[in-house]
Length: 263
Image (cartoon, rainbow, N blue to C red):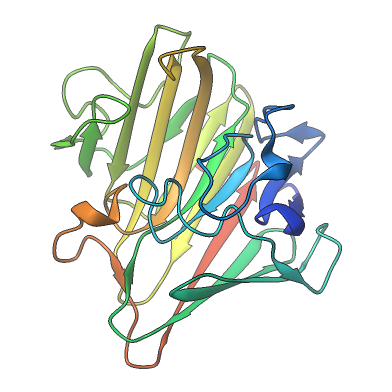
């Protein structure tokens, strides 16, 4: 297994700006889009990388309430270290250990419901694919802003979603009932594994092959470990969102591994 180098930007929402292994940069980025000049309440600015989306992905506020807030940090944003952010109804702390294991703590009033996603936009070739359990329950979002429909992975409503392929003008999202995913790109591998006791786990997929936004569309492909099973917290039914217990905290762990032996 290859070692991972993670770089984050605590001053600008804690976004992961680099995820490197074996000389390869895995994160896709957009430069010159004004990401460094946002404030809480601003419209989302898509600069790529990996964003922490919490307490929702879609909806209000778009991509959550943490991405636009500076974080306190005990490091310089490279390697390990702990970063924390306080939002209106919760606080989030992230600790990167060993370049591959990331531990999270969300503190809020008991009963607080939320969705969290490691919104990782990956720099992938047209030959790339993502491996998830065949037959896993899938909520497909056939359009960038529309409602979801049920199906099964990897073809929840006909066309397969596991291969990214060339740009075709489409943009779809999906949330798959799984806690692990492995991305294949030629000989390279990148896996995500999510652990959280008593909380709903899923893997979200963003497959934008030049279909979003309506003006000036571009290609962006995401594989996103999630707590919760919907993009928009406002649409979450029973069991669709994480929930803070009587302790006032939720703990979870994300493990990222490069060039593993995943199938």
